[in-house]
Amino acid sequence: MNFKTFNYAGIYAAGIFTLATTFFAACSEDNHAGVLTETESGTTVASIEGVVKNAKGSPVASARVSLISTDHIAARMAPIKTATTDKSGKYSIDSVAAGDYALQISNTERTQSGYQTITVEDNKTESQTLKRETTLEKNASLKFKIDSSFVKGDTLCISGTLNCTAINEKDVKAGAVTFNEIPPMEATKVAFIRKADHKVSTQNVKWDFAPGETLEASSTQVSVTVSNEAMSSAKKLNGKKKLDSMIVPLTLNTGLKNPVLLNDEGDTLVLYKIENDKNSDRYLTVIPNIDVGTYNFTIASSESVRESKQILKAYGETEPGMKIEQNSFWKAFGDNLGISFWITKSNATAPDDTIFVDTRGNESDVAFSIKLGQQPDLLCTEFLKRDSLSADYKTPYFSLIDSSCHKVLDGERHHYSLFIKDNHIVIAIDGNVADSKDFRLSFQTISPFSIGNHKLEDFIIYSLNDSITQISNSGWERLHAWLSAFYMLQK
Image (tube, rainbow, N blue to C red; front, top):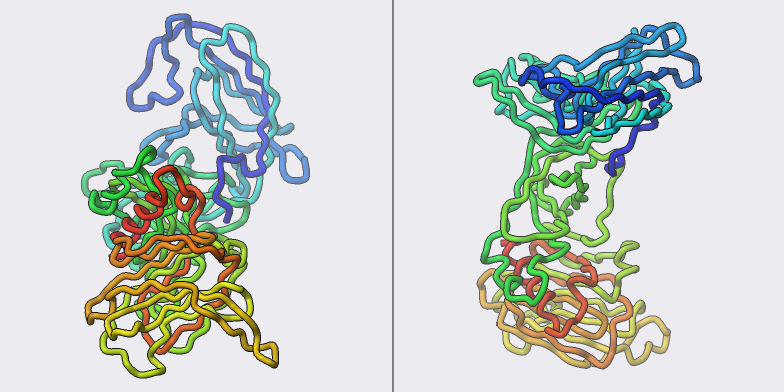
């Protein structure tokens, strides 16, 4: 399912708007949407005339046309006005005040429908004519998973539509409620009416209902809290204090197919399911722009698997001797790559225990290897240059360019990050930058990874955009701040 900016789901509406100016007093407070209101220069009133057709272009007679507000809740409000099409598929609605509305139209069998947002502009003194047609399409459906907080008698409504349903005992047992007869459209809000107190609460969504298809979504919301401590380094930056493209872990117990996250701004966030994870319910996502605060997301289903361009690979834990191959995004951003993992290791002395991560191969002239140092508590990242191939032209020989060693293998659990940008490397341990320096040779691409005989936890391979990795007058401080916040959110 595509999540995008508002579209009319293949529906056109065509009609004639005749506008005039007059004065009216405000009506009922309970249903204020669409009520004629008095303004300083008068209130614009429109007449809507339209025609409804089916997919073959034939007029649809006896179709029901409902004019509703864009925040309509069907369990609490009646349509502002209704009409029925004649034999030619035509209808008219008179005396519509300035404002934002929706037209929801269905055939007599209630198998096809159309949906159209419509705006009557305020303070128009001249006549205005706009021709439109509405083409009915097959209804969509929604399977909405509910959590244990929902009880029999609660009501769910898709705001801005005529679609509401009351939860029954069967729904509670199944943990899901089904909406039918939904017009093809994009919904942005769902309303909950609780039986206990009859109060209405709403939740922002971004549901794209396609003709004849069932969309799966969930009432479950997940939250990410960014603390002051996580952003402490970012707050010291010059200029922008927020951080882009932050990778955060999430635990989701969802049965939705191809789950994605929707934020309050309507953006779709890709979820990357962590591989080789014993908990099987952990994911990573990328928040475009973070600051101190709490971010709430709704879980929805996508028609197809959405790939992350930033999270290239992620494993709950590595396996001895495993080979991690490149994907298309890795190959595209091979000179802009980071890895991170948690490690608890001490007294590693056996020869076959020296290598943790190795990228020496035929794909690149520059490589790195993370290995045991000369002292048993040292973890070293060595940077190497390929000098030649063996006589059979298959085995590359590498010579050492530089190394960076740190006391990590002390028996405690530590978070290790390495980020490479062209010829610059940054190493951070537990969020603190331990090394940041340039080389005379640049990484053009980074070969597939070979893992040694060590268990590395939450092993992540990722890329970052230029807003984080671009060197500035302050050097690499924005990348350093990103690595600090990244560590705090992984804890």
